[in-house]
Length: 288
Image (cartoon, rainbow, N blue to C red):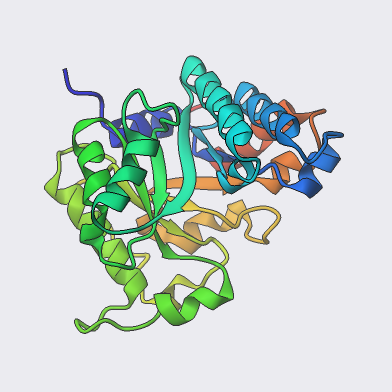
């Protein structure tokens, strides 16, 4: 029996009024605010507490893998326990790995993060496709047949990215706009779910028009998932989400990390619920 698509599972979260993606970023400054050491035990504690507080409240969690892998094998073991907690709680996980390569090398990345039964299995992963959208084939196979998802970097908020992402391809499109188009086209070609399984990363602090991304566009068929960092600490206001993303954001996952993590462990569940409610209201969801 084929697994439910990642897009179908996202659609169910949206129907329940859940659009918050809770970040898990155990870097030194945040761990200090938690009264934890900058060590693997602190990273695991943060990850598992965020999972426990986010289950049933946020649509998903997004661990930034670099903050675990810096501790070597112990960090990966800690991450495995965080992921196991999420699976047990029925909470979706986007592994923020930003992997990109060609051929069998990228296929191995996809096997690591998306293969059913992998110790590091997540529901979706962030990917980089600047070598060409076709290089994502190994992960796209998991999206087509195993209920997994991808979020392709398209327009990111770091200023250094603009030279690459606003560069114009031979067909006249910007690189960022082409990433959006390619993801939407894959969704149109694979299934009829109301939400696609391949989405894009678009920074909420950006003027997307400068990247020639048409926010008024609503491609026919599956809605394009948008993973949007930048709300909260980075300066974007969730109340402006509809203006920022327009029609292209009708399947929006609003990522917040520091705004929910900076207060430490005390009050974590309340902060996640408050931010989840704010996102729901901003996007006009009817679900409570």
